[in-house]
Structures are given as C-alpha cells and as structure tokens.
Image (cartoon, helix red, strand yellow):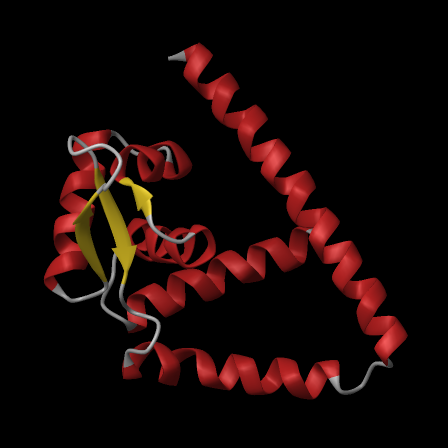
Length: 143
C-alpha cells in the first residue's frame, strides 16, 4: 500500500507540473472533482491551508478557468467554489493515457475480481479519510 501511495503522490506532482499548477492547486482541483461545489472554508479544512491561502489559490484557479465563484443561494455571505475544468482539453489529454492503461489492466480481471477490488479500494479510502482526520486533529492540537 505504501508503494502505491508514493507512486500516486509522484504521479499527482507530475500531473500538476505538466498543467503548470502548484501541487496545492491540483490537490484542490481533485478535491472539487470528488466533493463537487463547496465553500472556500470547506476547501480550507480539506486541504489544511489557511483561508487566506485558499483565497489566493481560488483566484489562481479562477483566472485559468478551472473554477468559478457562485453566491450561496442559502446564505448570501458565503461563496461556493464550482469546478469548471472537467471538459478542458488539457485535463482530458493529461489523464487519457492513465485511463487507457487502467482499462487495459482492469480487462485482465474477472467481474467478480473487479468487484472485490472495488470493495477493497472503497474501504481503503474510508480508512485513509479516517487517518487524515486523525492526523489533522493531532497537528492542530500541537500548533
């Protein structure tokens, strides 16, 4: 698992660099892809970045068309950050080789094996989320 984690982080760094993004920008883009539209405060909590840093990050992503700000219909004081990059050609071209390779890899497994792999990965994500929360709360207590 540790090797897969390291390779995932290395891949993420390389994707960010190939798109001309800072790694925190790219992590935020992935969080938005996963979570959907969220507030800047929520993005701050999920990334561990200070709210001022998140505001600057959102400014950069908005400038290149990866996100847009939208007023929260339920609370006019809040702004929702909406992802806008999924159909950008540079994103599609960057991920297409990985997508194709993973489809080829998946085709070497039976449907039952893939179901078991998907269950494991889903549970592994839950464990990682729990560990991230634990580490985040421990880091906050030390500061």
